[in-house]
Amino acid sequence: MKCYLTGCIAGPLAFSEDLELIDYEPFPVDEIPGRLAESQMGGVSPEERIMLERLTPEYDEVVVEASPSPEYAGFRNLRFEVPSRAGIHLRENLEDILAEILDMPAGDFIHDALMSVARERLRESLRETDRFIIQSINALDELDEETGKLIERLREWYSLHFPELDGIKSHEQYVELIAEYGDRDQILKNFRMDVDESLGSDITSEDLHILRGLAESIRGLQRLREETERYIDIKMEKLAPNLRALAGSNVGARLIAHAGGLRELAMLPSSTIQVLGAEKALFRHLKSGAKPPKHGVIFQHPS
Image 1: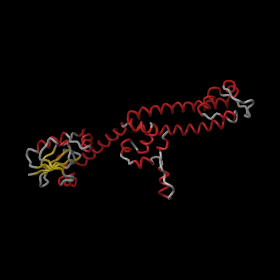
Image 2: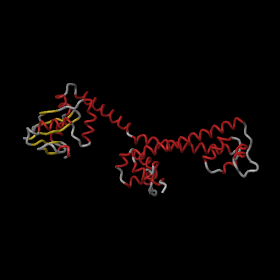
Image 3: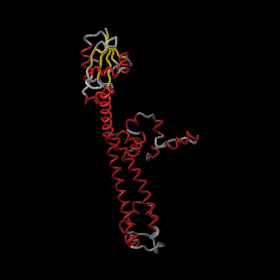
Image 4: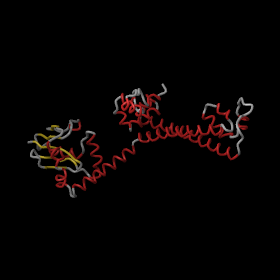
């Protein structure tokens, strides 16, 4: 004599060979998300163990709708079948079967259980450190973009007053001189430059105030970028030390961001990882037959 053991959102259920419900062990309502997650990972819930302890002594064979796993090693007379007759029967008649074992309408139970699962998965996704890495690397790229625009604006604007200073190629030094000294006479007094007479025009104190304020704002963004980069490095060292060692913190973080998460990145083939970040070029290749991209984000690796 054999029976079937299968499960659903409410817990494990046992059916006879004639597909009659013979036993069940419901999940505690507040434990449903955890139980379902455990099941998806191939684990055996406490309720399923209780059912197996009751069924295996009474039946010659228990057909379990699951893949073989070491978790079942302590039980005898098991056969694994996916899908099983009982599982198909349960899913086809879920609401009617749940109505037999629940003290509330099946539709309400399913709705409440699924909402609980959705809330738990949302909480889990928000707890995942890779989400913080994705946001921080995106913020870093936006800081670079905005800082670049503001530096270009500052150079064009300040060149009206002191065009010779544009010979300084270091953006950090250029911004620091304006923020620190402001007027060109003060810069020439405190910073050695081979300039006898500037071709720029004089500016008012109001002009100078705005320019120094803009330079200070850029310095603030530059400091924030440095802090964000250190933050990313710390997060990457904790979450993905091997990826950090191989690709560097910033490139590794960008790969995670383009893939949508660390778990998603780990599932991608190397050929896809190679062109992550070159989606626009890949789309042009597919649409118009243009030359396909050879690489994406990984091209930014310093080596």
